[in-house]
Length: 260
Image (cartoon, rainbow, N blue to C red; front, top):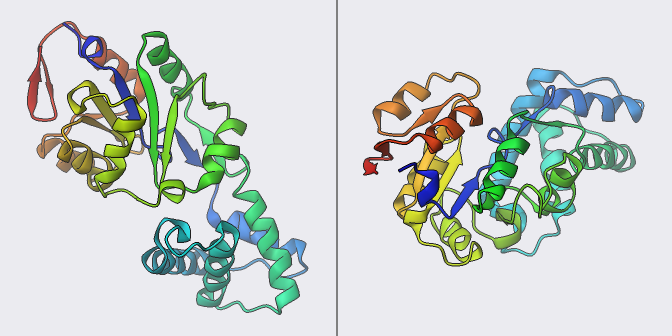
């Protein structure tokens, strides 16, 4: 018997699993700065500045400021300003606001993202099979309301429910976000659910901790993927391979247990 016949729900991580960033962060910061009449910031310094600023903000005000009730746009305004400062760029208030508005609008649209070509067909195939499809993502509300629909990944045709950290106030790798997903799927059991992601720490381990099956995608041929396999995680290059794995009519080893 195939694994797909035993599953009622499959959940997905979003970025790196279903969609990817286009270009570099510096591209969008450069365009915004030039539109405000300022020189293009150094890409490397900008990337490092953003990485540090985002990490600090996420630590101080996790889930995009959910618990502190910080409006999403204010969370990002602070993060972006700190990114520029850490990269060595400071602007007057009016100039920064012009730059920030362009950056915020860009990352709230489909412009910086692309959908992996196997994502939509695979999700639709699952729903045609009667499988409930969910999203579990450390993302803010704009993914749900704007970005994913603009990319052609719509609730009702590609997915049934979404659990977004900025909306529920819990983020991966906290296993509670997976428990919320099980509830939103109609209280399906973990044994009837598979989670697919691209992070051993944020996707595989917490999904397994609640009893779900789990698999990882290594779309970019990372060095860590071999270690994931050695730790017992099923690792695939794409969703086409996952579909083949799910429909295989034989005993399949899934995340440390045999599924007949």
